[in-house]
Length: 616
Image (cartoon, rainbow, N blue to C red; front, side, top):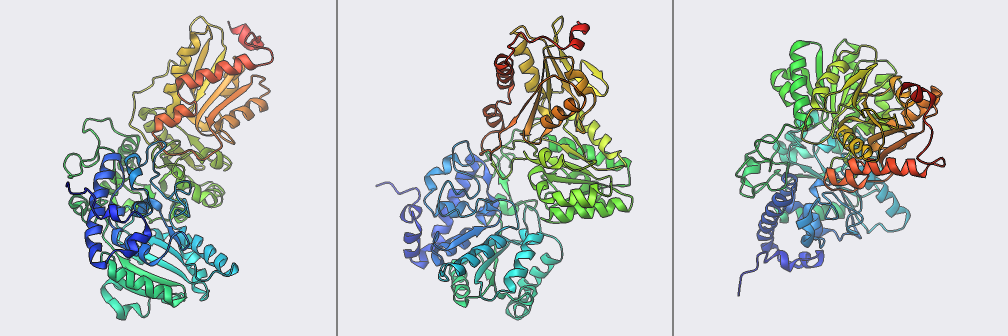
């Protein structure tokens, strides 16, 4: 008889079987889980290092606590793969992070064991505080509440707001599992990291009085996070205390996989689909000759700009490499500041730098920039400070799903007075717009760049009042004006060719700067029968709405059709697939335009505005 591929995983399909497994079998099960993760995640792509580090910890959690009756909340849900394995989803890992497949984060639609569908950091303790209050109000004190948070996420202000409340409520028995691996994406810095290092070195004596006990919480640890029995013992003690308690568990990111352990940069935090399970090859699953990403082009241009300007500094929130700041940090380390997972602090700290005469560039994922809206509004814009924000992964990001799509930035930040928002259509324009933003002295600017490889350059055919005309149908009436935002320019050009096959005249215009709306756009719209905006953000309050308002303010009667993402949380999937499903590829744009022209009460034969007739 053939030996089973996963002899132990096959015997523990659920928590009940896991709890019945003899303790001496747990090390072998942990090794099997690591082998499964390496093979599965390297094939599909996903977060590898964080999950390899929490194998024994997750086994202990599910042996001590009975999910979902006991609530287990993961902060930054990319460490939840082992949890998914132990709650009946092993067969779904072959479609991890693919359209219609397993999410890379906890997902309430997948399982009742996924209580919180989060991936933004520093939130789990607040969820747990509320859940514990609900348990008390409902007369269910025997239902435990556990929050698993990494040391990197503990740098966020929200985590300390929650600890402040938990420490003052001895009757709120939340178990805070502090997964201390010395890093979030990269090594954790700051005073907290130093304090945790002291606790690791000092052992029990140091643990009697520390930051957590000073706040009123109990403290257990430090515990070897790769000894399931030791973690189990600490968790059972924590539960029995019936008091808010921190269980300090020390783990190693990338544990048990040689290439991850040897990678000091990020311990193979994430890998792309097709990454070699043996660790050979590029280590990223990408082809060596692939074109550079938008992020790489930005990073190199910023480093070059910093060489020209001594007043240029950069700020990031624990995402130095992912946002492209590594080249500048290598050349000018004293001028690059990584504040940890603390976007609000990052923005107001940048405001302080600007007050002192420096020009900060804040590089952050678009989805995380939402967290610092108040700081951008009141700390930067109110003071008209010259701070440049670079929103990486703007629009559809792909396999990371709804929590990572950068689709709300224009809708929310468009309300900030004095904020200029740009969306380059190609990397040549990225370089130019970055320099224009850094040259501003009277207020903040935001550049949106996608998570994608840099495509071919799109050169303008003409330029009118600062707006690039990318295409104009020759010897045709002015029927349709297409105004794409940033990298959707290529899709708009494809749509223009399709519309021309229907005997329509099309102009494609790229303003570069989306907000405030250039006066050239209403003027152009007035010369066409229909104006169409195309953006990879939400339509409500987005770029298209701003163009329509600008047309109304300019008394331009041309109707404006706004195309964008739906008012919904877009699932995970390939970027191109999701854009196509939203109708934001060339054929989809063309179909929307034809439908709008056909469905108009006056039909496709609608007379052109007088200004357009006189120009023919």
